[in-house]
Image (tube, rainbow, N blue to C red):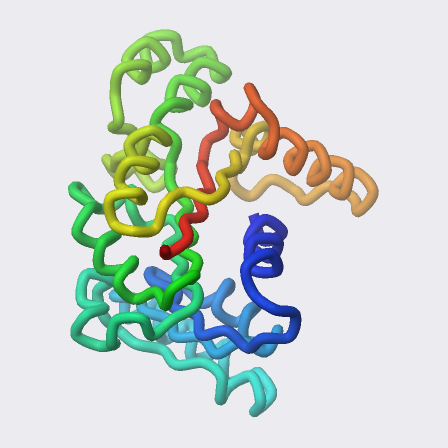
Length: 235
């Protein structure tokens, strides 16, 4: 999805513009650092202190020019209004966060308020319309049948979390003033890969990524992807 995000940024903003980016739920800061290396000014928000510490350690190894473009904030994504003024960012990322929040509408509304006019809101969520695929392909027929009408699932960490439907998020984004501009499927073919599986050789990896990229843009494949990448644009 890195390529998808880059494509959306390139399509929304002039070439060479240094963007103000807010990364909510940044984890160890992988995406934040990538954008800072590209020249953008990035603020990362993460409530897990250990994750913030890990991000600081990685950031300390970066050149000064990158370090000075990154601000790390230990805090909750629900509190963006406490830390930042409305309209302060050109891009807001919220990747892999909504599945841990029972009612994400308030969070999404707050993130939309952080966007300047024309700003991009990038979400990565678990796809509720594809929940039956993982157990079904693994031969867990009871789990597959239970997943068809559910938005709950147990993730690979063993946590009971929730998924989102494309139709519901489309309505939500329209309601908060950042209507859906583009969406993609993520992990269409590779969701069954085991944790810690060996990375394929470069040639095979490039072919795999090309297949995933094609599927993630194409119906009907993208509709059953494990994850959805949604991009909304502030009006």
